[in-house]
Image (tube, rainbow over the protein chains, first blue to last red):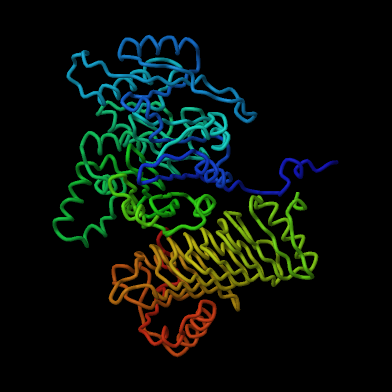
Length: 377
Length: 257
């Protein structure tokens, strides 16, 4: 009898060794570049994922509509689209709407309909809310109430592209080589606890915040219940969603700096807090008391991005990897150094940050001063 | 499949440009070459290919330029790997015999569960280097790190020798690692440079070096200096501490009634 295992499993593997892959690259001078390198880098970590999710976050994407909220929405039915468009026309000034261009890719089966809309919050709506808050509420309304419709991107001059497939297949499907941005993040998924569906692919987004994640937020239950008190509804069936909402709450709403965010979601261990100077101890203890419900437990490495900034962070005992590369104004964050080297072989510096310590790339603080570089030419 | 990998072969020496070559094809081709008598393999433009050096079971010299992928030399029995570049996570995973020399830094869990052979890292390592290294009879793995280490160095270590040289530390600067030797119950760690008490795990003790320690350490530092062009005598002319497990079964009674 023919040994079929040699056909289905030619290398006779007894175990599937997977993990998610994450990658981010940013030009800290704000110069835009195509998705080509990001796609190549995440594809180099193909074996970390299993084809059950891939996605990209791009910033500086829609300069012609930079002042408008860009909604990317996936529809599982035509009826959902009709309902959502009526809702958008009622609640916003809808400047422009179109189907997100795609090309047929053999591996991408049964995709949802994906549309994008450029929206303005009407100044005349008269509820006194900040426009960003108004947008968050409307996103929660669509995702929570309208069947078969999911807003998976809602920021200005940025967007998320994601779906079920390997990341390089998703990039091919959405023709991402045709777009430009100054900051790209990417994710290849190996779903462990939750289903592989289009909305469950990374990045997760609210407003212009995106998060890609390798690991598992074991504290999802307590985190999501805490966030619900602030109006965030977790509808994407995946743990990473809480990170996006936590970041929006802590940085945008509570106006906390990135270092404080890190001290909340990945606080130093109590034993390390005890060794700090008194004032620092008091701050860290206070953060753990006030924001204890946003401590993220479990193994994680995340790349958080928003307009002008990219942040890499791991859990405090670094149970998932993160490597940093720097080249001139470019900052690279990756699960594996080889993915960075593929697109930038001659890095100025490659290093591995400590667990719980954020690595920040910012337009406000470029890696190298722009003047110097200009003089060098 | 493996025959699609282009090889320049001269006698027992082979050279492979690994650009765009999938790791399975690369490793399968290397197995064929070694079976055909090749004893020296040069891999250029390596970029993330995993498990290089596994399953060859011969004393083959492998020279790598680039960034090899995770689990370099996993389960390796015999080959001698030199990397001109950095290593990623899991380098030397459950290695049985052979040599890995990294002219750069390395990621997390270097030498995990190694049961033999030697690993030399020129610069720093990430988290959990030497986790659960073990030894039996004559088989004693050694992991030598030229720079400093991140947390949980030598975690659950059950055997073998781990050396941390701290050559890139400034005067008076402590090593980075906390929780050194947490759960350690076998083997020995030698550290050059300062470590505060709080950086050590609960299961370890600190001692000075005896003559037999100095002999073991001197041999490994000499070898390190040979690979990377350092001055062994100068390195050894410094204060070292020895970290040892206080108990062979620290939690033997934890769940016993």
